[in-house]
Image 1 (cartoon, rainbow, N blue to C red):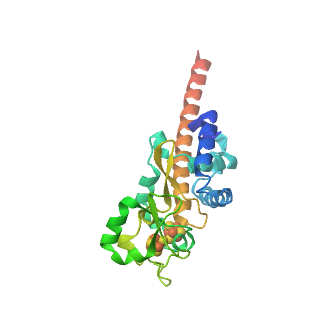
Image 2 (tube, rainbow, N blue to C red):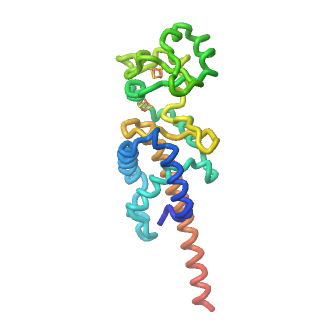
Image 3 (cartoon, helix red, strand yellow):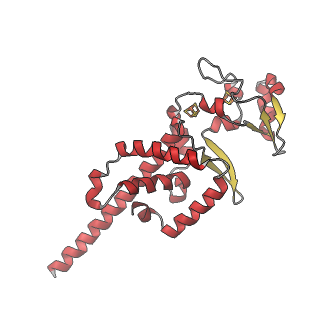
Length: 228
Ligand code: SF4
Ligand code: SF4
């Protein structure tokens, strides 16, 4: 019900279908499910269903809002983009190092190669062409990435690290001819979980504000009708 206040059901279903098609290679359904569960746990602590029960808010609403936060970039509704939220909250990264240990590939676009090598010529030995995407190179021998410090989880080539490492947990994808930053859904990445949580809170608060406004104007017109 809360989600329907923010977005028309049919429109949501269309966006969902498209998002699933374009993101299916990036985010596995199992990971999305686990991440949504992790966000749900945190959202329940931040926004109590009990407080809004009189307005008809249920746990299901929280789940629907989280699903909307997963697939919708808030700039489509006039809010902050995924990139803006992530940039403002770098403290959400706990430097656990999972992304550097578990990533299956670290892409380097041909346009950033020269710059990377200028600042770190040693990197040349560790870069190979990407067979599937001719515009890209990639780091060789990752999982774990050999540049991660096993003690501190810090990156050994931090200042010259590839763009994909800088923007993680956001991943740039091409969809419908446009570049979009989607969130790499990893339930054990605190950064990803908090990003979805923040988006869910923004959507939840907006839906409650609209619901309260709707109730107020309904009550006003009812009182007017009773007076006359
Ligand atoms: S981005 Fe996520 S997985 Fe990577 S170090 Fe930070 S919290 Fe860990
Ligand atoms: S290059 Fe650095 S940031 Fe990128 S995966 Fe390796 S250790 Fe992590």
